Length: 315
Image (cartoon, rainbow, N blue to C red; front, side, top):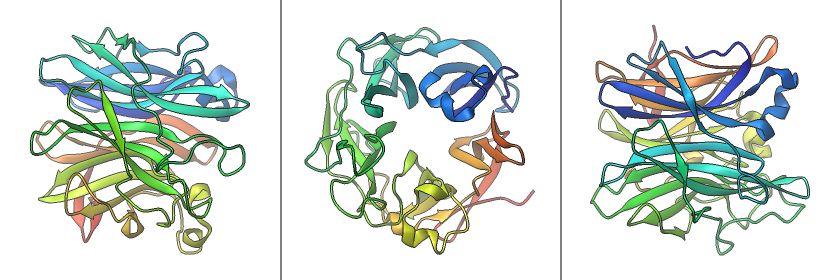
């Protein structure tokens, strides 16, 4: 487990280099006292492990930029891939303030060694396209949701895909969460396309995507807490948390209305990774506990396919 005595830890993403797992995570000082304030103070920390349990902290990966940068409030959740020339690419969320609302776009940083990261001169590299996605209007939603990039190679070798937390530009205000989508051939120039899911599936927003093939089935993982479910889904959902659903293709489309909960709201931002034995496990951050927000990252938990989604394997 990763737990910092002086800081809360929450969203995170992983990269594997040989036998080492690199963990990139959002953190903010507990001296803020109120964990709700952490989002505007987030930096990207870095730790390494060979077993997904014991972590050794390394120098921070990223901090927010100087105003008026696209990430001058905070650096938020992302993902890491290795490009065809061997260089590592980190795609991350940049947040800036517009009249009290946080406007989000996607930035890029690169590294040769996973330790020293340099932001791309052309940031941001992906912004929400109003042809399909909601832009902040001061009334419909509390911010401009365009974050949490999950980047992966096209299965047919045709470039790269990015799944993005976004909201459709139509539908009920509490039910516009969709799987945003962009494509690239070089990991730098990106073209935004229509979402890979439809609004009206029961979610105000779908956070922190990941798509993998588990036991021969394509599985989409995302996250949504109860307070951001639609009014209709709240009537049937006992809790929010980590959600999963099976799909026919790793590149969608995804019928999010069929998603089922994998955890309750005690765990959030689930990440699938193969452990040292090659088995799929889930890591998540400890969210709500008896005394409120926890802010630490769990040990790995085995998962298995069950019906059209994932379930935690009984211990």
